[in-house]
Amino acid sequence: MSSGTIDIDEFENADADEFEERNDTERIVLFLDKNNDRAWKAATIAEQLGLDTDAVSAILSRLKERGLVRHKRPYWAITDNKERLQSAYRLHRHYETADEQYGEERLEDLQTDEMEEVQ
Image (cartoon, rainbow, N blue to C red; front, side, top):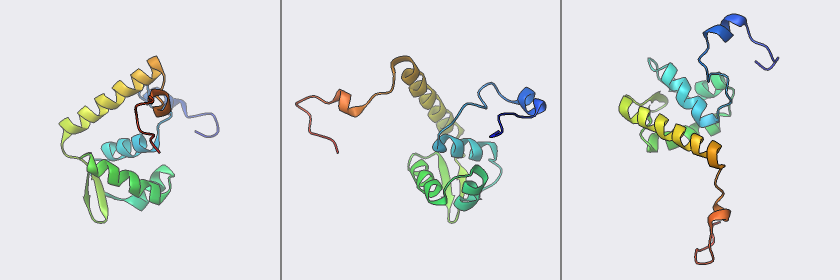
């Protein structure tokens, strides 16, 4: 897609939001969800998505803490708890919509004199 063009069949068969730019966490979750019949090494996920392996490993660890991926060293897979995954998708979309409507919040804008400084 870097050339600014795609095949018309790819365009016709794509979901409405498929070409929106996604952050790395979203890309990893979507990749694992679309390929939920396999478990992947972090390096392979990084290679498939064109990301840094260390960054992918860190993101996967955070996703594991949130119960969105499973891990059996050295492999990673999307959670088998579909309800949890759907809930995470809904919450993420809610935050995206709020950011679009009201703008992204910046912690320093919310800080008052009574609050401790956050570093």
